[in-house]
Image 1 (cartoon, rainbow, N blue to C red):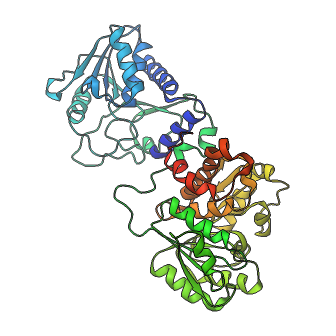
Image 2: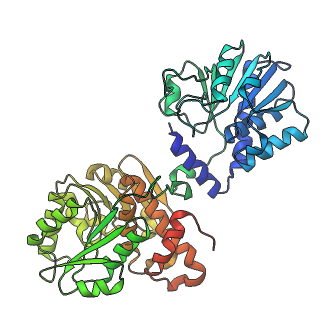
Image 3: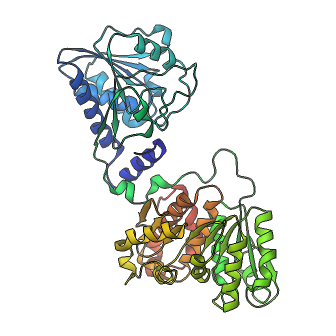
Length: 483
C-alpha cells in the first residue's frame, strides 16, 4: 500500500533516478489501454473523459494504444490550461494525429456519447475534496451511462487514502474497474470495483532511497509562528553547538538559542550574531542546571538539540540523562548525549543521530566501517524499534529508520568526513522537526546535508569545511540546486 502523498514523492524520486514522468506516463497509458481491452472487444466505442493534469495525460496516451477501438476524447477545460508539459504534449499528439478530440468549456455543453466503455481520467490521487464543476456534472452523467466505467488511478471524487467521498451530498464516479499504478492505494479496498495494480517501471530504489521527492515544504501556507531551536551543548568544545544552531536557522527555525557554560558562551556567541546564547554557571553541564533548561525549552515549545560539544564527564552524562527523563517535547540527541538514550525513560520525541561508533555504544549493531553501514540497515531498524525512537545513523550512506520504515540517503561527498558535518546534520534535523514528523525530518535532513556538500563539491572537493554547508543548505533543501 502507498498513500497519495508518498506516491507523489516516489514519482519525483524516480525522475531523479533517471526514469522521467514522461516515460512513466507512457507506461501508465499502456496499462489503461490493457484494462479497456479486458472489458471490451475491438471495435467497441470508448469515451475518454479527461482532466487537465497528468491523470488526463495518462488517458491521452491510452488512446494511442487503442487504435482498434472507436475512441473519442473529451477534455474538461481549455487545452491551453492543461497543467503539465507532458500532458499537453500527449494532447497535442492526439490532435495532430487526427483523433476524435474535443475541449469542453462548460459542463452544460457536455454530451457523453453512446459508448460501451467510459474512461474516467478527470482527477487523480493528488486531488481531494468534493468535485467541482464541470467534473461534478460530468460524474453524474458518467454514472447514468449504460457503459463499463474504468477509472484511472482512483475514481474521480473518491479519496485515494480513505475510499471516502468527502461530502455526503457530493458526487463521485462509480467505477466498475480501477487501474492504479505502482502499488495499491489504501482507499481502493473499500470500493465496489475490480482493482488492477499496474507496474509502470518505477524502480524499487525510488521508495528505498531518500531523494528530492522527500523534500516537503518547510512551512505550509502562512509562516510558522516561533519555530525555535534550543541547543544544549558546549563546554569542552565550542564550534559544535554553534554549527548546529546555525544549521537550524538555515532550515526553518525562526530563532536559535544555545545554552552553554559561562566560560565558553562568549566564544559561541562570537561565531554568529544570529545566535542567542544563554549562559549558565560552571564549566560543563551538570544536573543542577537541568530543571531551568527543561523549563525554558518546554515554556517556549523549543526543539532541543542535546549533545554537540558537551563532553563526556560523568556529571554531564548524568545531566543529559536527567534532561531527557524530565523533558516531554521534541529533541535531536547527538554526540556525547547519545549513550544515555537507551537507559532513560522519557516522554520526549527523539531523533538520535549517531555515527557508527556512537551507534555501537548505544547498543546498536557494531559496524566495521563507514562504507558498511548500509549492510546493517535491517539490524539498525530492529534497534530503532527496540529503542522506540527514530535513528538517523550517519556514514557514507545514512540510514533513517523509525523501526518500521527504513530509508537510505546516498547524498554526500567524501569531503564530509571533515569534523562538524554531523553537527550541521543535527541542527538541520532540529530545524525541520519544528514542522514535520520525526521520520520525515530525519529523511529530509540527511538528504539536504549531503546534497549541500554535493553542491559545493566542484569548488571545495576534499577541502570542504562543515561551516561551508551552512550557505548551501537552503539551496539543497528548497531544491534550488543549480550549480
